[in-house]
Amino acid sequence: MLKPSAKNIKDFIREIYGRLATAGTANLSRAPIDSGESLARALGYDTSKLSIPQKAWELFAGCGNPLEIIGLEPDWTVIDLGCGVGIDSQLAAFFLEPPGRVIGIDLTRELLSLAKEYAREHPNCHWVTGDGEQLPLRQRSVHLAIVNGSFNLMPNKEQALAEIYRVLKLGGYLALADLILVGDMEPITDGFEDAWSWCVAGALSAREYDSLLKAVGFSWWELKEKSNYGPLAAAHLLARKGGGD
Image 1 (cartoon, rainbow, N blue to C red):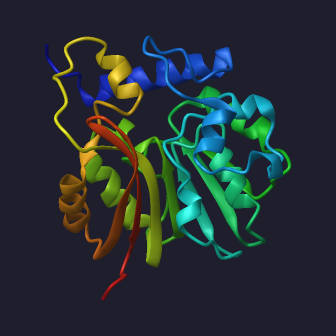
Image 2: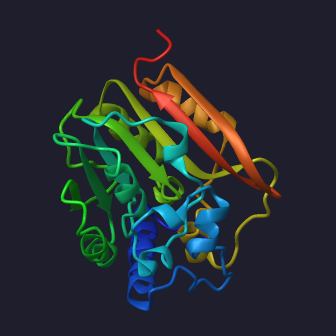
Image 3: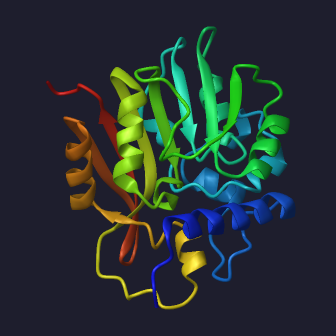
């Protein structure tokens, strides 16, 4: 079976996540996944203290809690790549004060429309339809990039990391949560759309992360495995632009 092109992968993602937004649930896959508020609690989110609508939690399908590995400064500019309905964006917004702001970026217009609705209490949240491989932001304009369960959706990982590196200020951070490869996985011959859309087909190994981070210019990073799922594991990555020099 031929692997899909980058364009086809992005079209898969827009179509499937658009359907999720319409259905109001993150569980439309032929291979159902853990999702919703129960998953968020399992990943360390204190949902009882967050004034995020229940409808938003129903669409949560993250791989971790990237904000638990980084402390925010109140004046930071934060970008949330693949923000979905904006749960991590809203969580970041709780810690920010003007001129601090969050920019949520996603390929799927339907999800961004919901993010705008669900984040009305946070005027410092802004929403942009965009591609993580071509960020619509100025060089060195961002203090922190958070990515939760969406990095594996990006076909060109090196380009995505290079874009994150470009927009980060010196001393800025990338906080990422996603699935990584920790063992041998059978070739995917069926359901390629699901495999890409649920972060499986696009998963990298820790060694591949090391190679790509070094290639784009990062000099300090730390990757920690969290939960193991056979050949895959959930992991947190924290990288700093200019760190360790």
